[in-house]
Length: 238
Image (cartoon, rainbow, N blue to C red; front, side, top):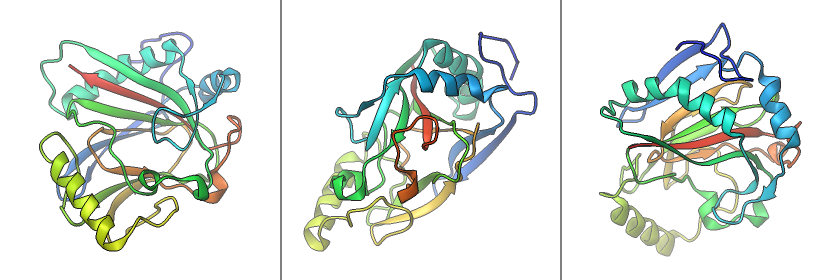
């Protein structure tokens, strides 16, 4: 990756990129450590941002819009590695959507059943989640899962119906999932691997991959300076 500047951001001189393979489907997950040269720049953006409780999705926390300059920097420097890793050629355009700072703040008692199990972000195999861990702290990371009854690790248009029917059948037989953040394997979902939360670490994975934040009680906060702050971008490679 070239360190071409898009002010005020720059790549860290000791940036490190790793490629992980998750589950039996060997889904590629890109992990990048030491991403930004100066993490305080994006922290300052978050400090000035206006966070609102999320109401349009299942995200259990508060969110604020990311600056266009940060999103542009991310896509400029990561589009090539994403295109090559996931063999996306040709790419006619890249569309960024749902670009937010995110802070989990909901206690387990407030969670819906959908917030107590792993989820997927998109059915489109050319849409990817880009997540940047911002703050320093011992926060929970991110886990990737397999749905045990179906064996599915990625949910797309081809297997969505079977996944949904099987999930409904499981709930009818065994009841609703335990009302808590999922932090490991259950009878219905197997934890395949996890990414540790580390300041200035960036993770990229397909939106189809089942995943969940590994949220601890101490992670719950709406304070952008001290909480489990992430920057999240969803990018479609058209």
